[in-house]
Length: 160
Image 1 (cartoon, one colour):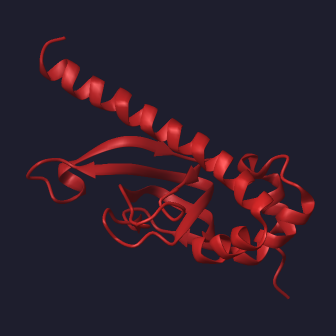
Image 2 (image 1 turned 90 degrees about the vertical axis):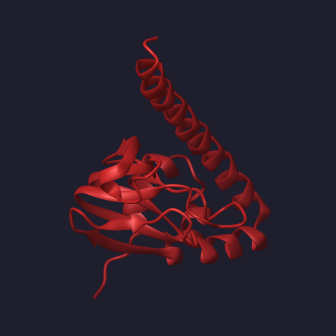
């Protein structure tokens, strides 16, 4: 008999303090996944209908560099690991990935279905507001990481 993912969601820092009723609502949108090293959880420009709670392993968020076109010609913006959340593009139209998510070291994650979650948020605006607050923090952190990475790349490139 399959085990409920509710304890995994409850134990993840992203959902810390979420009302038990809200947690019970969203658990039906969750599934366990395993991704081998070298695979991609998502690719830039593709439809974004999920996000991932990383349980173990490492995931590189990358953007293609001019003339690169593959992970060889990619700039790693951020590396995520245990306890991190990958992806917020499922929440904001046009629901397209802004980065590639390349698995550096085998990833075990809880995949959250964005379409399912958007439906739940439409039904319960309090849940929607709470998730939006959490994802706004996540988006701000990713923007800051991207900014620092670009400063590092371009600051060194111009001898600053």
